[in-house]
Length: 149
Image (cartoon, rainbow, N blue to C red; front, side, top):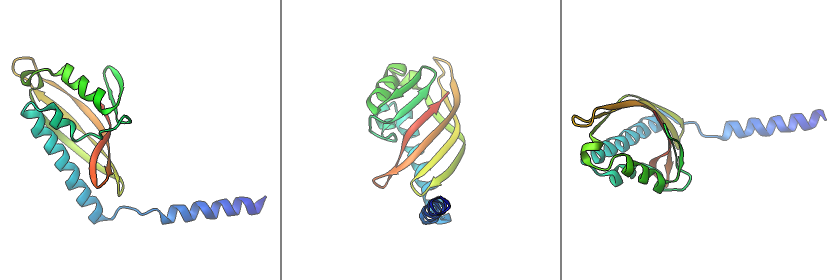
């Protein structure tokens, strides 16, 4: 029995040491790529292009959005919800992200915490905070989970 535990511990130790940790260069490049995704999303939103904004999300049924209405699964359903909630450029307003904190979780995963603000002179401003889980899929950083409040 002692050898079973020893063998399991050795396998676990080997698995932990072979997992590649992100280097400083990986983290800097990933951070820059993630900031570019957020910048591209902001520009699309601010020109009233919800579909362009959604290019920053994983186009997959496993995408999850968590908001005030609960859970939404899937890229298309998330797009539909955005279009329903923000039917016109005036309703969309001007988006700004601030207080961003990007933390690398692995070479291909990161979390982004920040604040969002919509300046909407006619409809009233909206604001809140968010936590994004982003993954590099096929070489491209995308949001795979969005918890915005």
